[in-house]
Length: 409
Image 1 (tube, rainbow, N blue to C red):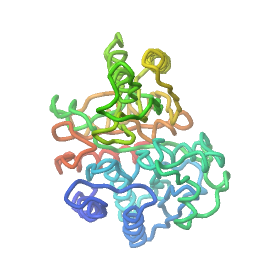
Image 2: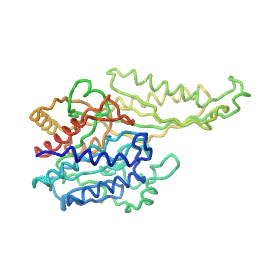
Image 3: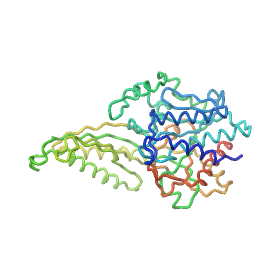
Image 4: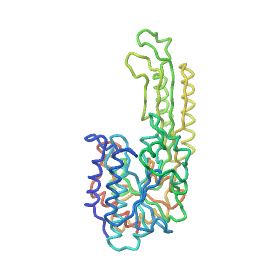
């Protein structure tokens, strides 16, 4: 039983055109116009094969044969279709379309397993709207609830609840959004690696052993804005200078990780009033800490918060820290890893067992049901940029191994 890489590539090439930034990568935020266009294409592709599509109140989409959702022992395959700003054409959506292709192939071959498989598209995985990654899967797992519809807000103050209402989604009902894990046999996700390891080692497949945990905080530093020429250096309370020192501390603390595994990133900074001739009055920036050990993530965040406090006091500015989101590190299911290894060996694929430094929806689902993840190489190890790409042969191998795993579970 073979998947069709031609069909996968045809879908992916259509879907990459649904972007807010033509010519500069793919920008497709959840609940936006191009997200809606992508959903319509996927619905039409699914309907053409007789599959039913339903969408919950958060925007998570489900694709399967009639009756699959209510069936005990189902296998869910999923990922996401949203992107970062000016991101790549494969991140997330490759796993969605490969899942759909698995379902199409099973149905075309009259496999009984087709009725066991449901493809899921998780909403807002990237956190591009609200700064909270894996939002859809967190609602599905019951980690988020009705109170978070108002708590999660965009930079300009729009809440998730308002955005869902504007887009015409149904009113939130917990029992219709949270999964009944007793009905699910396994959760699988296929993804591009987003790093350099597989390419550098000449491997076609990565079988994920564990996914890093992550904590994201937002720091606001407030000083005193003033004239850039008329204010002597001694009298200044420059928010940007204080923020720069804090950001340097983030890097220093992360580099002290004894295993050299933990990473910390300041990737978003807003300066106010952001004028060349005005001393900055306020700076807001995010800090992401990722690691394999939860206690190491917690202790690193604590060290960074202490550094922010000390620098703020020293520089005569005030600060506020807001916790945006977190996910715990989690290992994939050993039995599923073993099945994936056997399938890769049978297919003659070169592979390695590896960790994922990037977080994925599966790590939210994995504490509840046996779960597994597959990676395919990223050319140049690059992702979240317009240059993101993977060789078509590797894309085909990943999708085929996903199908083989589904048949073997």
